[in-house]
Amino acid sequence: MKTRFKNYLDILLDFVYPRICLSCEKNVLGAEKHICIECIMSIPKTNSHFQQIELIERKFWGKLNVKHVYSFLKFSKKGKVQNILHALKYKNKPELGEYIGKMYANDLKEIDFAKNIDLILGIPLHTDKFKLRGYNQADEFAKGLSAGLNVPFDTTSFVRTTFTISQTKTKSRFFRFKNIEGVFEVIDKSQIKGKRIALVDDVLTTGSTIEEAGNALLGAGCMELYIITIAAAY
Image (cartoon, rainbow, N blue to C red; front, side, top):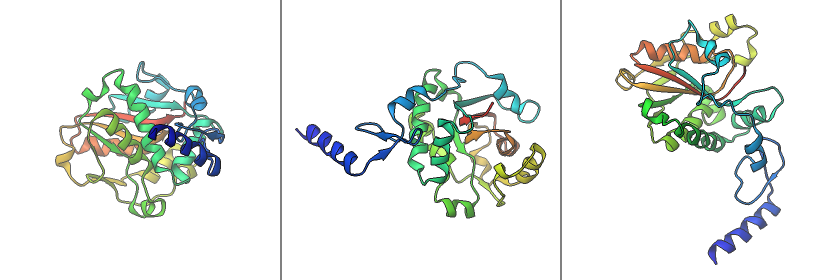
């Protein structure tokens, strides 16, 4: 009886306060959350947890000693994946990051990935940018991965010490690297040394930010480094 009443209530609320799919912007109904079933079935996945994708892996060749790079979705401009990332980052939807993290954790369970890592870390935001946005989208994604994989994640041992302009506003890989150079710091090496770490971000483009952050972790004694992103452009 209670379940039936809840279903009626959900239908009524969807009618009065319609919820929008953050991918296609159509109404979502009933048990659908954040992303409609149609989009979940159709958004392009990389399947990089089943086989390495050279176009993704090569972004770090000779620059970062990374064990493997996993990306959930394939990014394309003006596509559904871009809509999802834009909603997560700019539309005050932190819960979307955790939701996607749990979704991808289900895929990573297929390869028993949790046995490979001891800790999950999101790419840190500078405190000023965190205050402006109110959350770190990488940490929200990491939170979902942590819950789904049952692997701890940490938000205090690794920080961004310098406020930088958005990487999307820099025109070349050189300027992206210079913009991000030296901005990350490990403040508790005991949490990093000897650990197998999954470093998490929302989107992988040139890889400059992840490269700088990853090398900071390796320099602090990280034993093995994995990269996980919501999406990758390749």
